[in-house]
Length: 533
Image (cartoon, rainbow, N blue to C red; front, top):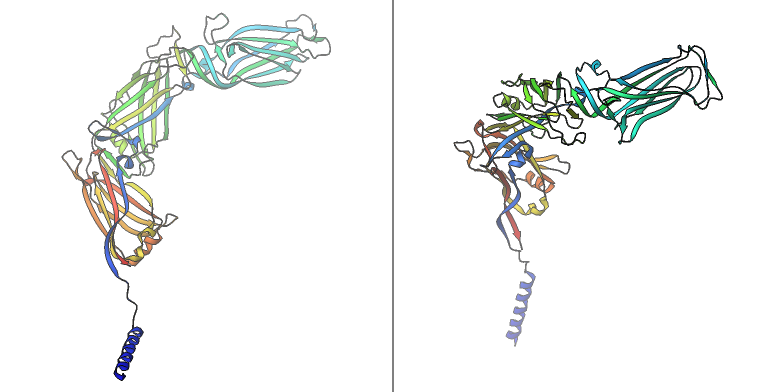
């Protein structure tokens, strides 16, 4: 019994001892190697060059294109209406005695033709049949020295709006005072063939002087009484004109205008081997002409570089035939287009300085075949003569420091960076362009400010070139950025990732671009994660 009790006591003591010494079992953990894709982007031709800059050839190669309007020959350069229409004075000195009239009696009423003095504008030989006024005014001035208030009625019988509204005004002119009033004459059609319809540059007028009906009683006019009137145009723009516009030479320039073709291309240098260059002239006027480019200069105001166009067609008369107007006066113009080959010029040199301004001097000689008998010259305000320069770069191009950039939203919280024990950010770039790249890669905060630089000025070689200077094989480049503690903090804090590519022609050569060319890059997290259960 004693032995049995002692055995039980020993067993209890051992159990108590074991229970009192028991410790918590540790959780299992292990490291895992994972590749985590973080950024991916593909850059194609249309990402580097706006579609306005290139066209695609049947063989898939890309030609840089240039198509821009150089100049417009406007209506008011060819035909202008004179300011003064007529000045007219009326005196009663022929009266043998004073005469007495009642209120409302007509003193004088005249219907008469009066020519436009178009030659006063040094535009010789202009013979107008009709003209539609786009905008402007007629100013009527009168001075009454008759000793009584007058009602003056002024009409232009040959100025009609909407086919029925003839220009006609009646105004009270006070004695011994100067009267002046302006009237809008927009949209009035002027028939300039006179009262008989058989002449040119002639308007038909109506003018009446009436004793004003408000006069309280009879009035007496004396031989010394007189009346004067002036009628003139002010700020007239012609919307349409028909007639003969003379055989004249008009000079345009030297003038300049901003040239924004390269505004969307952030590049410091560009050169081309050769180009097909055309000067296209669209003539919307109903007259034939010779256009001569006396000088055309490209200007880069950033660096002060200028290059003038040189070639055999510079300074040469370029003949352009007349347009046709199937429905006269309706604006249904069918322009005549002439294209002149300017390929044998130094245009590639003008193109390569990346101009931001163009200056020119031109002349236009009208009606060079001179036929004024039919009066069939026409013009419309909205349809000028347009001059375009067009070019297609059909050889290689050389690009210096073209900048391409992009920004991506970044979510560093999804990476669980605190569980990463080691690793790298790996940039994998496949370059299928015939361009070398210098790459900058940043993390940015919510204000687009850089908080960490992953790559700066990293050289990434272009694709391998074939005998035609196009890409025969893409080149892949891998770059590793070690993961340290500051980079971990940047990964957690960043709101955006941002890259810049500085693009230069591979091997400094003139290269050929294809629509299939590309740059594909991705950033991968090659991390060792600590997992715990």
